[in-house]
Image (cartoon, rainbow, N blue to C red; front, side, top):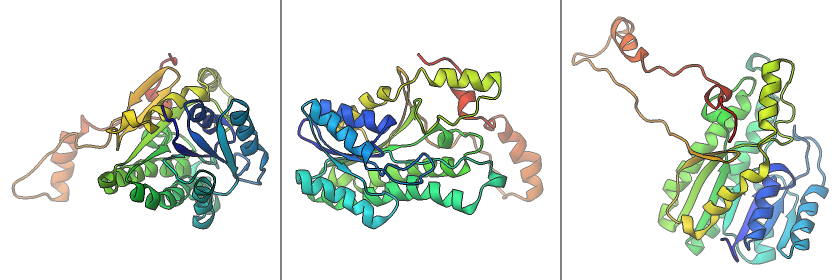
Length: 301
């Protein structure tokens, strides 16, 4: 489905990124496997994971090269795109998957923990996408795929940094879809449910937490790859600005914020009127303080 396309996958040394890179290669793409080789919290570096995926692709008869640059800085992100140009002469698809975690309840979260996560997820996705954009514009075609999360779309405990960055990615993707539609550049998001080292630190202190982890382990990273490949293919030429979720064998189209209910007064509002009229009228449509697990509460199919 992506025969001959050049695909860059960030954070592809393991987990979801690895399976997307392998699937792209199986479908005929030439792949840049980018991974800094850092820990889940973003510490350290190791060239081994990216090269191991490259060797796996090559052993299966595909074409791939490794990139171990960080997405978090503009210069190094530019080198990731440069790797694609140097090795294959172009870039057609960018999958922004790289990420780290620094989970902490908000009242305990440090500025450094906030900055580190936002720098990789949000700034990193901007940096690599911005580096790819001129090439997409020049060739009048390109595809971006951003990995968002239901932690941002819906909510989760102890992940203010991660949730804010992931929800920010949906706005970034939509903006790119709008700004670059004239150049036939598409941009979409995927919120993946999958067991990987990124969520391997979820606590299992209570029976409910143990049951949640048990369900998560049923959902492998390979389940995310088919949607990513499909979105990268020319058959999805008219799919842009959308947010999807993948949960084992389920694919969801997620809603986007739109007006739910309104109230009005011809002579305007006072604070007292808001309290006595507007809030009571709107209250029936208030959203609950849900977490991702409250919304996706059934066993994965």
